[in-house]
Length: 476
Length: 98
Image (cartoon, rainbow over all chains, first blue to last red; front, side, top):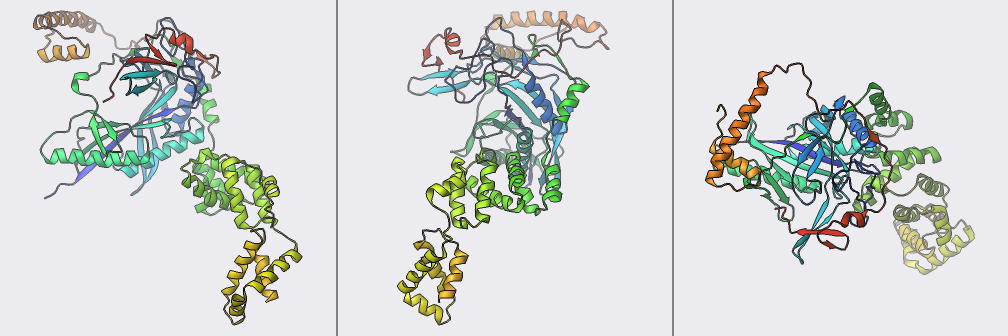
């Protein structure tokens, strides 16, 4: 009889915090600088330099902890993790082992069986490492320390997930909470959110955990899903063959669709953790905690409730609008200007979502302003432009945030309200298409569609189709 | 000697310390480490229940900096100590992630 297996998954998620400066020094964290431009004696581990904690890192970390129902460790401190690799100029990483800032939390996801709580074991603060570029030509490695000392939080879940779907739901939930907090943009592709997957399999019904492996190098939801499916099958095949799963770190190659072991036992590490002597312990007072709590934004669930009451929108709209804080704010601000929430909602959840999908962008990347979207809605309301012109204008606005009023004026896209001109064009169209005119007069209602199309073409799209339709009927 | 170090342990410690030890050196290291552990064991004779673990000597806490950029372009100073540089990056012997 074929055995049935259960997959047990826990995640370690690294999130780069959206601070202006590094965790322990005043170097900028801005992306795209020249290599090593954002470095100083502190983030390159020069002897005698003194790290000092960036207050904003502590506040973001605590805020994420509160948003994920964690207990905040009131007396927390840093520890030193020793390892030798060229991405780490200090030969140690400052992290938290013994007293991480947040513990024992959870987030709720929608799983197949309904609401499910995914436990959060802990969240700790630490610093990122530098970037290594392997130069195949010169057979050497180039090192850029701009990322060294960029603040990270690592969110360690309990082994509570059972499928790739649950893992994705958990990651999406974390990403949404953290984006709502403004603590990070959480972009997997750009590495500001990174997930390592700990996975084991066991016979269904067994209470015992199997031997797990850890998989790294997963930089898209698709790669995570593929890696989970692949690793599950690999482990089951081993067990079926009577072999053992070895506890190891594996690297996922998404192009090949397989993983391979990264380190053998000969490379075993002893991190020799000890309390970080250069940083003082942190005591989180009641006042500090209350202030962070008071600064928490309105999260999605509260927002959804308010949208139902305040705007009377359908649940479908609300679900889409509140998936990102940026989208929700765009909606609220535009609605405040034009007073037509349903129309704003339509532009956002139809055209905007479609363009985001086409261009593989996140809602956080939307660049057009609420003022411009409100103007576009006003233009269509006033019938100054028809709906297909409006869509064209919107696409330009989406890419480069142009002022639609100005754009329509400059490009001469305004609908012609000159009835005399319209009449003239329609008469020409009628004269040029005797067959369609004849069809229409013989009761073929559909023939009028062709004539409307011809008129719109002759007007270069700058007519109101309803007005064209009405005048055609009148003249025929 | 109360603490006996096994051959497996000394091999593993050798791996962790990245040391290649000869058989004589391993024997010597086993003896030395056993004695060290015996010495440390003396600490367990003390009753430390109720004593908070100490991570710092000074009673200073909450030293923070504000999130303001104070450093400019540090590349020349940082790269001054580079054994070899290529453009604005350090050059090190090839490392393998695999």
